[in-house]
Amino acid sequence: MVTLRTPVMRDRWAIGGVVWVGVALLVGVVSALVGDDGGSATLWLVLAGGAVGLVFAIRASSVAVLVAAVLVGQELRDPSPWGTWAVAGGLLFLFALRRPRFDAVTAGIVVTAAAMGTAYSPLDDAGGGAFGLVALAVAAVGVGQWVQAQRRYVIAEVGRRRQETERRREEVARHVAEDRLRIARELHDSVAHHLAVVSVHTNVARANLYRSPPVAEQALNDVQDATQSVLAELGAVLGVLRGSEATVATPAPGGENMIDELLLSFRGIGLHITTEGLQHLTSLAPAARSAAQRLFEEGLTNAQRYGDGSVSLIVDNPSDGYVRISLRNRRGEANTGSSGSGLGLRGMEERVHLLGGTFAAGPDADSFLVTARLPAIAPTTAAEADV
Image 1 (cartoon, rainbow, N blue to C red):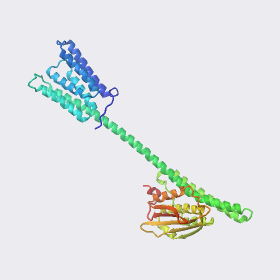
Image 2: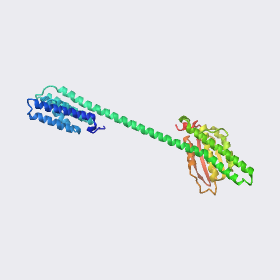
Image 3: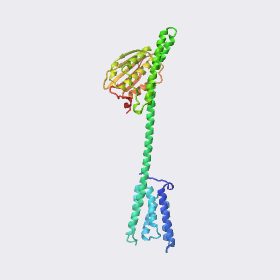
Image 4: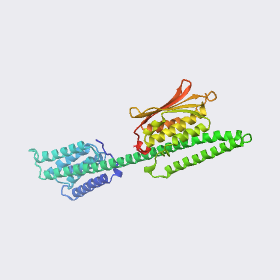
């Protein structure tokens, strides 16, 4: 059991106990001086013993209990000097205030035994009042332990509130980190593909500006379309950031033909794409279809940047509640040593894991293979996936 050892000078209850004993000793001194037996050495030994007991009681020493027991016995034999009983009660209170429950109860038993033993001993002609001293011992121990219990409660409550505050702070920090990660993922996935399209068509326009103006004009139109798409994607991301907590989720695909439009845009910049089983994407819930679209964007962008210009996209039949997606492209000779930052692959993996799927990406012979297993019955929104 935890023992509370608050310094006396900062403990109002301990100060009160010290004042209690000090006043009782002062009253005893006055009664010894004005009494008929003021010159008795026994009286002054009792008062000196009370003062010594006060010193040990301040230090919560067991010696204070022994002094209190002796004073109780002396009180029953001879009530002078007056106030001896109050000194014993104060010493016991100070001891119980700062010691564990077992020690305090033991101290109370010792003082009670001293009072009852003295009162009923055939060897001593003790006066009455033993039960009053027993009640005093019980009250001193009870009040001291009650004060200590209240302190434990306050300390425990303060600790609980501190832990709750720390937990909330960590939870807020975690949510902030998750939001930052979601924002980074959305910006990367939404912008990278369109910027790749802009870069390719800008080069086409530059190469044909004088040689073939119609081709250059068409390339610039494609650049404008890609730019508008970037602005629309950024607008969607900003809408997520400005929305309430309940609406912070991955934007769902804009329509059933989004995949076809995406493939068409990549084919427009010269990427040769072969597909198989795209109709199986209809078995995915909106959040899973959105994740699949982002996977296609990132995978095809990487194929265009680091591959030889061709990519194979396969969507398998739903099996065991999952739809398997594979993107394979041969690595281009010029880009063999280029690996990129890896942020796109990390974002793809995070998207899939949020929906409870699996993801793998890496070299496979002379190709680069990306595979993902998305649940056929997925949460309606990414916010539900986080729960």
